[in-house]
Image (cartoon, rainbow, N blue to C red; front, side, top):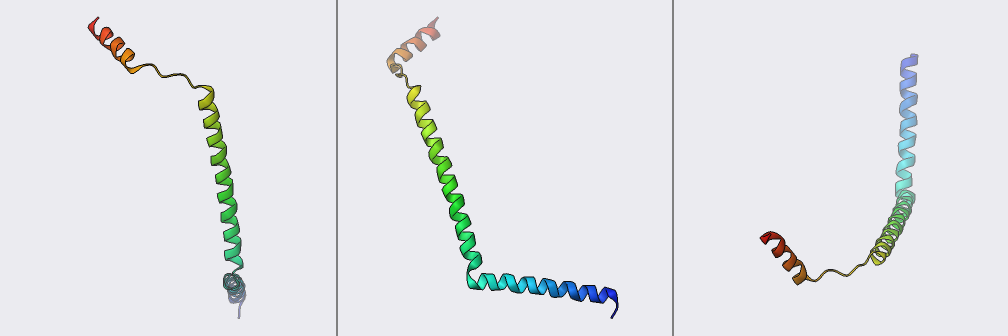
Length: 84
């Protein structure tokens, strides 16, 4: 066996061992638990961002509230502007 074959076989053995460990982790549920925890963390972060955004929008809308003009007044002003 020459060096080329030795390195190929060694590389394949390492890849096989890594794949076996990954399969074992999936079978034991470790990966699913980790993915689930990561997903929950991301969702909590997004919910906090949305909550803060809603608070900001509500605060800004309350501070800038002004009464809406009367529709009939606007209509009369528009008609007057069109006639002139």
